[in-house]
Image 1: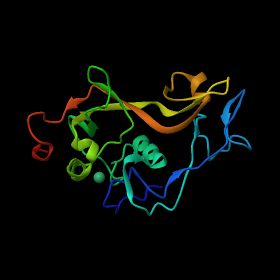
Image 2: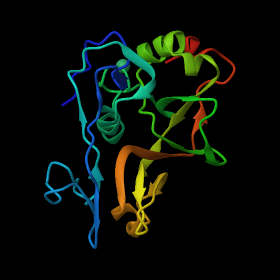
Image 3: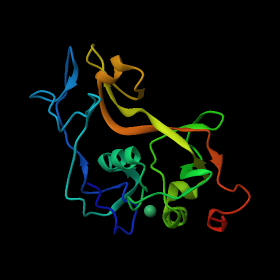
Length: 202
Ligand SMILES: [Zn+2]
């Protein structure tokens, strides 16, 4: 359940007293699991195991880290990264603010872990977020879909690697403890490239 509505800082960001819960991971024939089996509250409808988080969520905000549980829900449901409400949407598509470093996979498609954003909070994010302040791209997107997960892949030889794993790779997905959801943004267009975002006519 999203509880970010009244937050004065972006709800997708982690707080200092929230952290991933340390779990021993077992790799079996069916893939990764925590001790005791693959419980329904740990595995989603696609059979993917998600790393749980814990903590009271009242501490200072970490501007360089997402709260993975909130990131997953906001990006999955396409809700504003700050308030958890409907993001801004025009005929050109839904609004995303991406750091200048965000990878565009080909042409105007991009893979991102960042949820979309509403207009008031886009302006606020540009004013407050250090990473976006170093350069950003405002884009509008008519179509996006769930591409895969960012997580830790457990290999049969006992090693682990942090990777972005697509849903089209079921063998690897089964060996992954997922941290964050990744969406593909299709055919993004600049959000009024010649004017600052706050001057865009709605
Ligand atoms: Zn918002």
